[in-house]
Length: 367
Ligand code: F6P
Image (tube, rainbow, N blue to C red; front, side, top):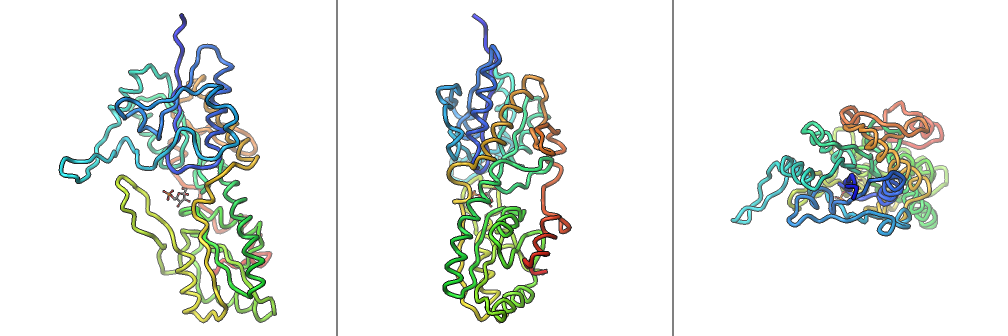
């Protein structure tokens, strides 16, 4: 009997529409090569670290039709960094320990040839560290935030923009009916891509993004000028990481053990208070879209991009292109070194062509 070569697949960090399409793409491409089998690790690397290991066979049967489904059949977590793993002590307190050697040992012990890590910047940082420690690994960039560098787009981003735009459209009619200012808070972490694209698609009057700290007086002036012209309503899109000039981001405290990120949330309410304090007389309502932006079925573009990434990732394994990440560049699928990909973030530059166009059609960034 011929021993099959095994590739291990996992999804890490926050979920994102299109994860299942990547998994299916890998499985379908692997099927066309003789002698390969695909195994999934449940909940990122935790599936391997657990005793007994929690793994799943990935084949046509287990992945049929999943490209249409949101979430990830492999589950995910952002509390499973193997290099800084939360470990409970006998007294109930928590410390962290580096379990990367144990992880690599376990992966090798079950005869894995290579690993495909589908995740955002945090996950790809882990990929690079594991690669440096000798693991055969390739990355696939995912995130609704679109903040991973070295790729023009991550899958999931456009679905999030579509969801946000659909909500925005609904807020426009109610803003108009009540002559209100409607503030809609979108995700994106320290990148304003979701906000910028939604503001453009929806036709917002104001778009506030992390890359351009806002002057609240300028925002109020813009709102007042709209009301003076007789158009008595305003729709604002604010990115969760936006902040006023000389101010800071709005956060909530997380008590989740092992959770490494800062939780950005509530800027819509902070902005509402700032607008009032700066003299905005209109009635204001706030909407926080939250995790709806990550849920549900991916739009066609993301299903396609995710499938292309899945095919590419498996081909990178075939070609032993380890330490690299699949990337979408200039309408083409290629690969870049993980080291380059994690050396920077994809933030909006203030001279970005879309920012310029948005300003040209009258959208205020409060700058
Ligand atoms: O990175 C994706 C993202 O949805 C961000 O836009 C957001 O700030 C964060 O994850 C929320 O994370 P969690 O699901 O852990 O609350």
